Amino acid sequence: MLTFPSPHAAHCAISNPITRPNHPLLHSFCLALALALATLFASPFAEAEHNAWDYPPFGENEIALYNAFAASCQKFQAMPAGRQLGGNKTFGTAGQWQAICAQGLAQRPQNLNAYLTSRLARLRLGNTAEEGKFTGYYKPVLQGSRTRHGAYQTPLLARPADLTICNGQTGQLKPNGQCLNPYPTRRDIIGNLAHYKVLLWLKDPVDAYFLHIQGSGAVELDNGTTAHVGFAGKNGHPYVAIGKVLKDMGALSGTITADKIRAWLKAAKPEDAQEVLFSNPSFIFFKETPSESPGAFGVALTAGRSLAVDKSRIPLGLPLFLSTTNTFDDTPWQRIMFAQDVGSAIKGAARGDIYFGQGPLAGQRAGSQNASGKLYALVPKENVGEQAVAKLSNTSLKD
Image 1: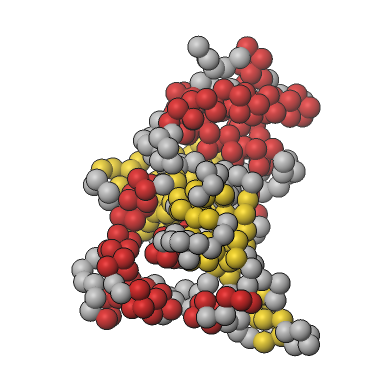
Image 2: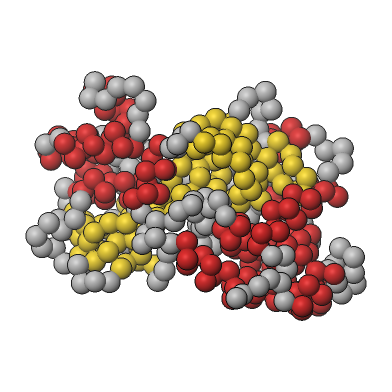
């Protein structure tokens, strides 16, 4: 039976830079050892959580917390020790987080929550007079083929060579060297497929559209293999929510959810569904990745523990405490999470998108998630002095 921690990791926890600041080499060794142990021992537990493409219990257990923490720690380790997260000393320096990581990863997974709670201070983000908004996202699993045949008729396109930035915005580079703004719309692109490289042919056009919204996913191919795809670029047109379009048409009413939109598109005539999709001029291009596409922080996301945030307000990698409601089953959602991704619709200090994982169960949870709540930054206790919480809410951060 695998156990935590090793005697060496325990010794490192005692000899960390908080109490022994004159031993940077020992500190680096301790964090590297802790990260190696996290990789070695946590992975078998994490695999046991998987059910095909689905990830129940959606991050509730200690192994999910441990894995998400280890992912942030890998990035902190590579930063210069003096670097301030977000350029704000309250959030801590990389050196502080390296020490916290060395201690935290030396804990047994079931003890990590208690360690982080005791080691870090909780600071409310956003306007404290109002609650924030917390939605969800996931990585879909689609059916596809490398060749066009049978039901595989919906193209997934690679980033074109003529997609560039000119005149301060996304444009199209012409063979004569001229650059035209804006780049073609979704309608124009689909109507001129011969000008684009097709990565894969997908089976379901509705699933393909939702892949554009999510930005990455996996495609189970008809040859028995799996291809991972991720964001490679966009045409620069503003995103238009087709849920609002359908509501304005009178096709949908009440609270608009992804499930309602999906059901309408699948039930509609193909030409009617396509016209609705064309009402959103934004278009995403993709690339194949060797494994699951990472989040914006450059680490693999952990279902139920990774949160997409506005990185101009919250530094990536930072642990957070989220108190909201899981609207799928109306249960409380109160747990430590990590700012490890971003989203174009995620704006503000008290706004977040919960990552629910891959596959249909994750999609059900993500599609229904929309609740108010409170978000807190978890920062080193020694950094909390006279700084007003409002400074964290209203100050744009440095990368």
